[in-house]
Amino acid sequence: MLCELCGKQVRSTRQVRVEGTIMATCADCARFGEPLAPAPARVAREPAHTGAQRIAARLEHRVKRSRPKDIIGELEKTTEALVEDFGSRIRIARSRKGWTQQELGQRINERWSIINKVETGDFRPDEALIRKLERALEIKLKERVQAVAVQKAGERRALTFADLVRMQQD
Image (cartoon, rainbow, N blue to C red; front, side, top):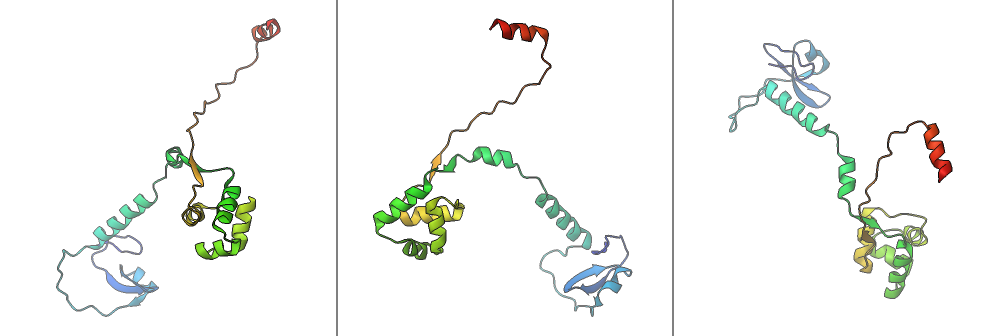
């Protein structure tokens, strides 16, 4: 069996409450918690997991969580961007509906000062606010953008006399 606190292989473990969590620990680590009375035997409907299986499952979950994200790949998938004139579009749509900034703020559950800053362009709205504004004002604030292929800069080399002669001839 494995100690859930230090990971040491031991013959038997003790059930101990460590900071509110019940753990199976070795005799050395048992001093870090409060000993629990042995639990009455219970009928297991599923196969009981040993300490090693539980630890292996936790380590596997940790590995999945710690995988690096492909941020560049995610950015390439994104094909919509916020329009440049979002402030004026919001202002025009709001006035077309006959709403004040306060009324629009109440309808989308935002402060009117945020609406004012977005309309003047002082504040760039996040995704959630963009969706709220699009839904309330029945407008589109995002547009499809073309993916721009970026050419990597070539290897820089030193300027030679031949390069200078070519430049003077041109």
